[in-house]
Image (cartoon, rainbow, N blue to C red; front, side, top):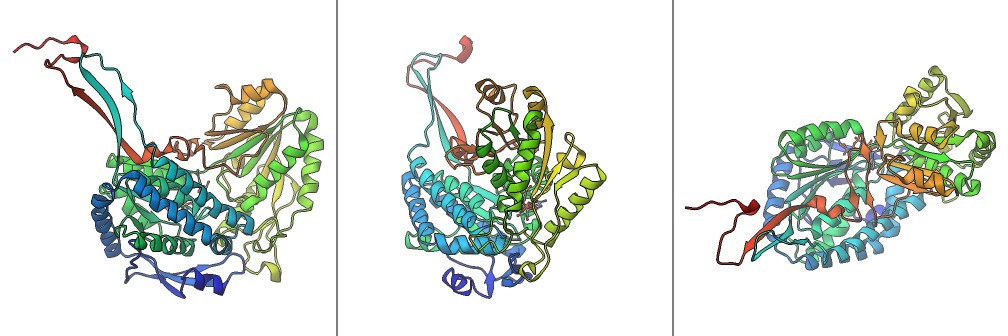
Length: 508
Ligand code: NAD
């Protein structure tokens, strides 16, 4: 890891504040990033001070006045080069993500690939930021809409996708002509610093003004500064529903815009007409991948009563083959939770399950011993429940899978929709009627509805996000770019008279 850190230009002590290729000194606290893999200190980071924050905002305001006049395809050219740099650094950055966050190496590489994919998408988009033209009701008038950038986009991100969430936002925001200020999770600051260093070289080589890409690091107070700041028209916040509710109130209080990507509580319906081989792989990967720390992780399984015994016994035996351990070893399926607080939340959930009458089909627990010395390794578990118990309604960010039975497809859909969150959902079925019902307006109420794949592992081409307590935001593909721009409707009168809309007469 030492070599990787030095190749990524991560030092023993790092500035956490940058305006692009410049890194600012700070008189604020030093905080440490420990790896959940082995519990060792990776490096220290200087938190951004309030003075740093002010300087960053000032620089980004200045940069916006230059960057917004660069033609969008030229901005796309910069994003293209960022994609190339990320490709060159994929292996190193993927390893750092795995080591700092605790996800498997394959998933670390996958996260960087997702960043490269969104760069490609944004490059194409830079030539497609188009509006509509409409027919005017007035003669010799032309009506059309066009899209302008917003200004500074504040990005508050979660620990579980320490780099990808930032790239989904920035690559789109940049081609749209915005400048970005990123406040990454305080649990994964080094991944953020590494990303900023990788792209800082591209920005410097192309004489992109300082301030187009800014980084501030520290705790939630910095996120609060962004939320309150009237100079930041859009806050894109990814994290817990608790955080989203706090951010939403602050930003709405100043009539700013938010893009919220919050917690999920995702279910898979396993029909009696499912291909059970596909269902098992989709469900197990979705439930234990990233140790259950994806917003799209499978948390609930709603199984038809006629196949319940058969399917749960296949699940139990699949869980028996899971290898839990160092996520940097490719033979392991499950890595670590992010930290001791996450382990505490997992243990509290196990207690609540007992109290609320859940029955463990596969027992959970914290792993002990030399290989697990960080204390962040836990056992993925399966719990049989009769419906959505209070603990089931809550997103526990850990590998706990609840299984329940259903009789009719309508009951299954009701169970699926009964939770407060609305991110991802799936049905495993080869039955056209129930698949179409699940996808209809009487079906899943989530932002994502999949058929014969699990709930996690979205591609960047689609709009990503969810409803209800997931916050309603959409990021990444499709027309998600519109969140980073303001729409302007323009009407031009090229005639010699001034007819008024709705035929109103006004003679003077
Ligand atoms: P978190 O809410 O604890 O922290 C996320 C970020 O918000 C951090 O940068 C944190 O410093 C900041 N923050 C916390 N309180 C804040 C406040 N009051 N004001 C401003 N900023 C504040 O979340 P986490 O533990 O890092 O991430 C896990 C959560 O994120 C899960 O709920 C998961 O489902 C969700 N998530 C959602 C998506 C999605 O796209 N829907 C994607 C990834 C993660």
